[in-house]
Length: 388
Image 1 (cartoon, rainbow, N blue to C red):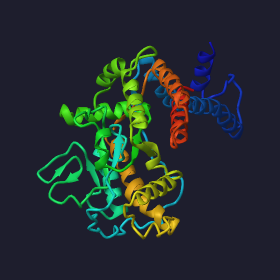
Image 2: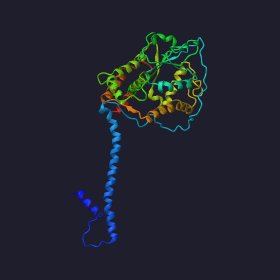
Image 3: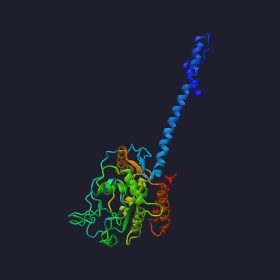
Image 4: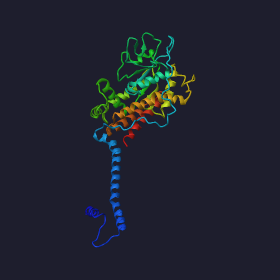
């Protein structure tokens, strides 16, 4: 009824006119203008309401959809690497430190360090950003080596034709990629006494590992399909009663933490590499570990007392070699329309419970246990945030 009455008024010019009444032209225009504002304001209000619904929907639905449909992901709309400060003072075109031909004499006790790395826990595709960073930090072009790569001149991270020429880190994924003959513990004469242990939050590591294997062994181009990820996660991420991937992730950390005769000198959480708040401190600690173990660290960044020469120089070094390159990789995924993988609600709850349980199992008997427990609780909290 109201719509009919409104339509009738509009048809008559927006006012009701009685027969035989002579309206003043100015009064007529005033009343028409006044009455026409009412439908105009209604249209504006309707459009505003539609805009609010669209904005709200774009924020809410992606957050809950993965849990509703069985766990998968949403479309990525921004990079996870966020700059919290202005880095314009860092010259992106600065040259790298001069490469040094570093070698040890036959009596040296310097040996490459085990770098136990859960798959995809090092920055860069196939860890290339990490490799370039270690080379730049130490001045050794072959600083980062891989235990599984062999050639006529290289085996188990050692040069065959020049035993005095060494690497700095020897990346290994044992026990995920088993190394039993010989086991790492029986090779202690050839490696340093401390271990670097690279890990990643399981909430991102499981998908990244699956994507990495799909590209390497199944010739997948681009991102794996959401359907394939759902099917994989349903089986291997599992549920509240069983999670093969979490057990594998936990056992990887536990074996290296307890491996005799080594001790973990530093945990390398993937998330700290590109964090512009934690990242600088992170590489300071790593530089100290390497120097304490007898490796050269560029004098531009660390003095003879193993203290950073200049935070400004060090942070620009980190920005160029880690942050900037990581951001470029992530932006590429965004530009290609990659979705952000997710888990079902019950899978997230499983991760929260297992991470907390794992943290409580650490008995604080080793020097680096405080760091490990701190990391585990941070991983738990990050998953909890996605459940709110």
